[in-house]
Image (cartoon, rainbow, N blue to C red):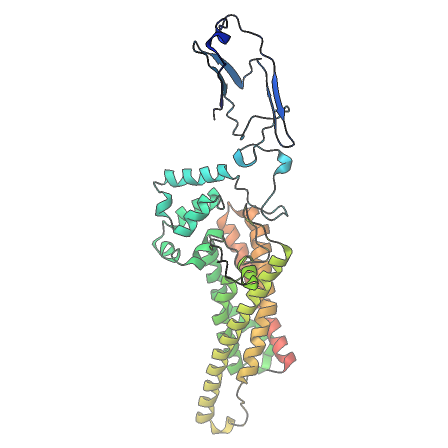
Length: 390
């Protein structure tokens, strides 16, 4: 970066006796303000050189390439904030709690654009919401690199067309693997938990067991999807939006997720993430339970029709009470457990330690999520019996 100052004397004769071999004495010039200090002296230094020309023009060039916005401090540290300088004590994250991902302002923007250029891409070739976030400096180069890697797969490129999947895949490249883990182990762990709680009554209550497993399979996907950390690419709401709508719009998807540089979440917003996901999971739980209990009652009625002697022994599962109970369970127990797993255990603890060892990271995530799923099954059976729906 070069900074030039030009001083034009009032008359051509004022510099007539001045030449490079006989420099005149130039008094030092200084300027200071609460946020800016600048001092100019005629002494040559590695950062400044004075050029003299035959015409009446005096030019000062700055050859400092440290990246600071303007000059430097006396102690050698540059200032200029996001221009590449800045005091180490002034660095802060987007969350105010030491968890922001550093984007370094314009430097981060330049790195993101450089990655696109190296890949032969332009801002116009990426999705509009991602391009806008890159222009505003909200997206670090690591997210752009992950986007370019994901686009190499035809299936992932198709998923990136959906905003929800795009935000989650950019935040966690193992997001789809975690969905597979949940749905894959859901049947086995929930069946095992049902057997552990019911023991000798397992086969006598097989219809209820089936209903629980069906509810779990339908809900497992949303339990991974909703609390997953995201890279927010949502545009701001219009001025006509209500205060409550704006508040929940600005809440993170996971209450414990790491905030990117330039983004901050207050304690109230993080609590709002729990409330918002809780309402969604209540709807998901109620709907999945409604389907599961309806299927169960249909099987029970079919069994009664075939075996008349068991008509009085087998009772239909209460649909509305069971659906409401499962919705509350997912809104409270499942919501909190999966937010902790995704935001604290995986993103804050495991990912920083094992981000270079994806296989090991996947294996540990599999173990953590398997244990969490099994624990959830046990809690549901106890909760359902406690409130009297089973």
